[in-house]
Length: 502
Ligand code: NAD
Image 1 (tube, protein in one colour):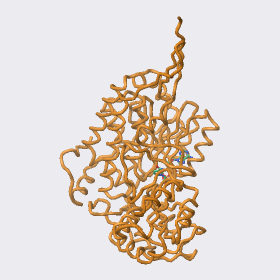
Image 2: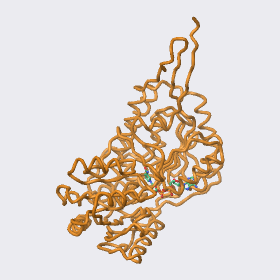
Image 3: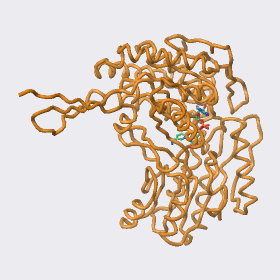
Image 4: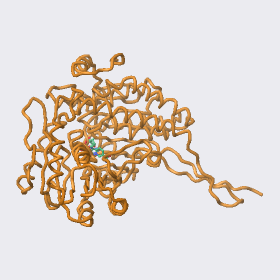
């Protein structure tokens, strides 16, 4: 095991030293054992900031999924976790949160090396992941069932029970934080959880497995199956013995998962998918410099690889020219740098495929006649870096104005009226997040109600807390992560009728 608990790295050199000392777990974690894939297959995970291979990781397939599902079912039916008093589950999950805290630098480093995000951002993710574990651990022994108001001849009890075996399939953009958002409520509720991390970022999930074992999660209650979506992901989704698919990822794959559920056992499918989030700036908003800074951060944070990226900036035409200049100035301060440098705001793009996809969208934007104001070219290697890119004069018929690019590319639209702003904002298949900048309280209330979006940020971008649900509407998904509402995704209601004999 790595001993990275002694020092708090401060500088690029400190992080490089920690990276050099790292030993990586590359095996799957199935039924309390670290193991190779049944057929011995591996996948290569690279550091996108350097192009270097980090590890050959077990690439699981259907046989591994079957073994893990059977172990998860045995664990669930055995009751060691599923029937444990909530206070008992709380104690174990708090221990896991404590271990994550102790190893947070190592966990943050793994995410940074694996997918290229700046290490300061990864550390922020760790705080979010640990906070999520603690929140659900602390809340689970404070939830009560119900006695229904039925009348005196019978007693109607409404109990909340775990679902059984939950497969959590997660993306690469916030590897450990997305994992925590899924596994914390699922485990707290008493389920057995099989985690499938993205093939692009499996390393922190495998480290988490060893911490979960150390924390005392019983055999089979938490397992990690690295591998591809079309192999092990699909096998889990088609399994007749998985009760719930908890998914975060693209809308296209979310749709496939619903089909797999229909083709198999009608498992519950809970989706957090893509976005093309509008950020509405009205001329009456206060402090344009601050708003521009936030508007740039909303798209360039995490290299734009964020589900709620504010990728469509809608600006009232009377201030548009001046406001875009301020956004460009803010973007200039957000150039990519070495992800291990704590001063870097942006890091590397996750892999060649995503890098090529982003550049392809930029090419389309130019071809469609949008006005490229900054960026647009990949930086010279080694490593996969794309600078902040801003297109102005985007219209709602352009591909870059409609499709999720998932990279540091901002599309600026102009509008002349509140109605036009709302129409543009809602003219999207997605409905994950929206921002609204104004000082007019009547407008804020009106527009907030009209926006078809799972969350609306008023005079901020991406305010977050464990107590507030996170999720989308339309093709951005059908579930909620975080807060006590997420427990509803991982539990069912059982109604119990007790006749009272007179
Ligand atoms: P993706 O859909 O390609 O992959 C997500 C996960 O699904 C991965 O683990 C992948 O291996 C797996 N998968 C792929 N095909 C599968 C299949 N046929 N069967 C089962 N599993 C399969 O997405 P990605 O590229 O990893 O992540 C980017 C996407 O995630 C973006 O669209 C982004 O908006 C979205 N996202 C959404 C949220 C949210 O909370 N709404 C958060 C983060 C990311």
